Length: 323
Image (cartoon, helix red, strand yellow):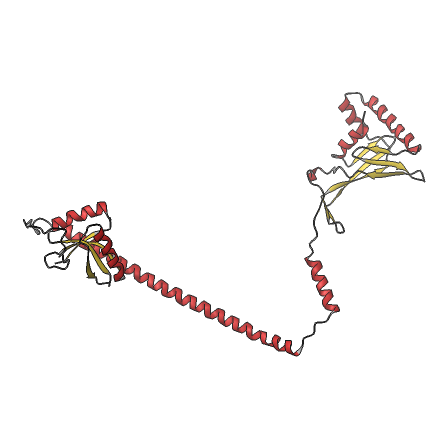
């Protein structure tokens, strides 16, 4: 029978466990703490103590052990009493009694019981899993105090030259504020101009799309009564002497509209390398430079080529008919 094992189990649930004819082990709740010297943090726990004046049997320990070992209460009380007498005899011989997970008991020179609790077990169940730990000290406050102490021992003296420099610093501060305000104002002005320019470009592009839609709608809505089919001999599509502004060719397949003429010329060269009679048609009402794939005088032939170009080259191609 290991008596201290049952005492340890009961200390988790009760604040007082009495060993008949020997004494009582007491627990008291202790809050979390910090040891400032070692920077050690302690979780909440139960402090353990021993009182050899409380020897009256309260039945807690004996009943618990009797149920655990399935023996009668009287038989267990006899065993506990015998163990307590053996402990007292060992103490009188000058020995120390070590109770596992509880502590150490001995007699001092005045024959009084002394108790040193074990620090390996925390009997507070709500602190299960928590342990002590040491935190590294933060040194910034220490360094700050050392600097302040150094300034007190060594006074800071400002020479006349340094005083002039110090007095000039406020002007530098105002100059920096002025430059910052100027920079913010310039940035805002530039952002406003960019927004205005982007808005104008978007408006012009929208107008081009509207114009494109109107031109296409005007052509496709033409009924057979208004535009009778004429049997005319069409000129060759590939014609070196081709002039897109010829009065006879009033149906133009538009490849794009460009803000800068050099971009329009670059597009013309690209289309000619592909075999098209690309040409510069001029500028529209918005100042954009118009480039054509081909130009025709027969509207049906222009429509056929437009459909082919949309399938093979660009879906954005559209037809512009000039009266």
